[in-house]
Image 1 (cartoon, rainbow over the protein chains, first blue to last red):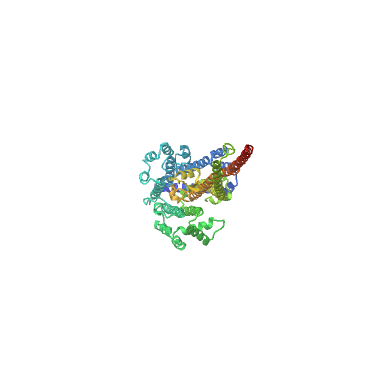
Image 2 (spheres, rainbow over the protein chains, first blue to last red; image 1 turned 90 degrees about the vertical axis):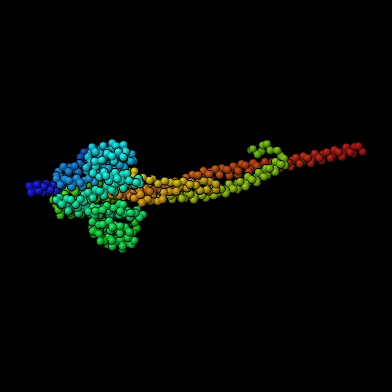
Length: 371
Length: 216
């Protein structure tokens, strides 16, 4: 009992603090304002809103998009470290476990970068040491001459057995894509560990993770479908979601619109996705029937862009995450909600800056902003 | 003026020249036909190239937009990493087709858009914007290969048409007139020789008759 009380106090403290921080994230009108600003104006605005002076300096010296992107990612990394610093105990463990996805991203960037001979400095700029692998580990990996050295150097990493198995597996074709999928599977399997009954709000966290896996699988299903060739879904999908993989297989093999709709309708993702499409698509606005037709039409025609549906899936995930965190306010969910919202804030800023640099009109950039 | 010099006004030479004129005129007719075919092919290729160049520009515009959006969503380095993940770059095979003896290149473009799971980048950590950008760039590659095939063919056909035109012109304006003039000269010279011979024989005959009269 003596231990439980400080733990609850810690949950309350961190959750409240991060809820306050979440409230300070940029709302949509701010993005609309930023879209109408010049790049230097955006940099000044960001500097005044906690993004540091580095960004403004980079814009002043007319740094390339990669440098600006690196600055934004650096800010994201600082945010992650800051959140890890204020969390304690189980909450910190869960947050750290959640952030371990960055290890996979970093390892894959290093492996692919080494394979393709991308300069180390370019790779270092986009690595975010938010997971188990710290900055020194990442530097050591970058110093390795080839991909084999990187794999050997990761001998103490949690997912090394998966990495090694896939790295040495035959055939070598699409090796990195296979490694990436296997690592993500292992990551989610590790997060869905059923041995955390004592952790506060773990059921809600698990529910969110299952939804995240569902949305990820649905996104992959849409992309594979648009790929125009029949593929083995089980090579790509990630187990552990609320929708069984067989349901995705059945959706994939549906020959008619009605068959697909009948199989999709029974999934928990269907109402959420339709709502998200109705809510977020404004040009032209969609009613529920239109949203269903929009998805099924694209499905039947194997059409791209699937990005609007993908954006709706992201909205669904974030909205659902918010709902769950409200239901269990003193759990790890508010932390995860803040981290994910912050990630999308950084991504939105990157989208605005790079979009404007590439000469896209604000109206073209706006649909790609995730709120 | 090579045919005007060193021409011996003999019957054998005249016959050889006549044969040569027939041969050259036949060659001229064939070259004229070749020139027409090449010009027709060139006109067709130019129209096709114009259409293909327009397709390249349209594809390029779409590809630039798609890559801008992908860069927006995935970041510059994300795009670069996805790009270098491609393990089996598509190859263009080159063969040839024959038009009036002229070998024109035929570039077999990669077989359209590849399924994205064969491109080599991972699915979980990338978005569909990468697929769209890759689709557009693969379409652009196909459009560029097709345009290169047509424009390469145009260059060769135009060169060959120019060469053929020069040959036709040389035959028309120089060789055939020279041969004809040489033939005419030989005919004229031979006629002159014949007249001289006739006149000589006439005077010889006259002299013989006069001598015979004086002896009587």
